Image (cartoon, rainbow, N blue to C red):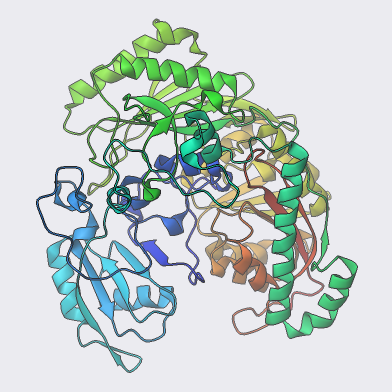
Length: 632
């Protein structure tokens, strides 16, 4: 889906962190396939919910370290821009200045801690815990709320443990902290230490550094890329087999036979399906606007690394082969436009500046561009003047030859209280763009999810259709359906499609696309999947039901998995994962031994296949077919 999915309750070996009030987490795009190196280099498009704090700290400022402490920040007269804590002294809101540390906690799960704080009538902006630790952190909107929290928590008894709470210091800005640790000046780019046998970044050209950050497999032959990805997926499936052995004793005999038959895997692992195109395949990119390594402002491209690693410089994408030339043309034209204007790039370190990001989406016949602009203290008249300048440049100026057929402008300002992102403002051309996929037409709005590799998506969707075994009597349950592309491509082959999606905008897109293609046997529910699956299954009269699950990168909420386990007549699940390691807990829950929580019979993995949607990066999709004989 396009929106961020729910966090998993218990994340092992990583810090648990959740922004409690989703209204403050602005600009987070959760499409699974967007979570690849292209967007990883572009920190303005952070997508994984479990890596985001309430102010987008991974992008805008301090990243929270696993081992925090409550010591005071370093004191002294630091020069402006060199103090790692200077972001807390600015006028804009950051909950880091209203943080507490909760101590002497009993053994707890993240969700349990969240409920316990709610029981005390506390409303934290963010909660953070460390696995197996006896402490946790929470931040609030004001000093009054923080003092109230300390008062309520101190002396509160939970599982025979008397809790204590105290003020905690803000975390240092990772960029400035790393510069200080490395002894770097403001103008020195951060350089990672090379691995053994690897060419050091200090010896790489800017183009080589950008390729390494955005498309790390750029210089590897494609057959070797596929081989590497196949090996990675193979290890994941062997790990899954180990987890089945640990979590379901009743399947051990079956698992032993499966391992003998499939080279240690828990099921048949079919050969990876390659992408039909390996270059210029991306149809959507989000480009950061910032300074290049020579300090030229209003550069449009990708970061050379992550902000948390001390990197904020941006490189132009002309050297990247996974980005189409049409997109590069728009980037260059937009860069020329903003360099001619009065407003500079937004600085994630100082939070000054205006132009933040350029999103470009391409189809076979259209090009959409969206410019994100931070208003700072500008008046509405000044902002409107800049929007009009944008219109003039791309309608009758030099930008007219860029190929843009759809242009939007969005006022976007985070790290503030209240609603910070205004609706997209249409500037020029069409309001939506159109694409053809599997002989169907899809309308794509500015915020609609669509697979970033159209040709690869056709391969993926055909694989899903094959494993569904769909017939004219089949009912398809499309969970996390987004804009409905998977279900709609199946609709004419099956009895009916039921789509479930949390994002209202995505549901509207799905309905519109159904109408465009003359499809009438689809219905959509805009709600949490766990709230509607059980009721939906009760309303289905057919026993021929298959669920298609295509969740965000973090996987499904555990309650959704429980609903799938406990649903009568549901015997087949096609699980599509863009992050198999992140979805491993979901896989385990599907095969886990029957219990009070998992009342339905466990599923078994029947077969799996990787599908390469992202050539030149380390990522690929994994499709697993789960089946069970009985549901009761």
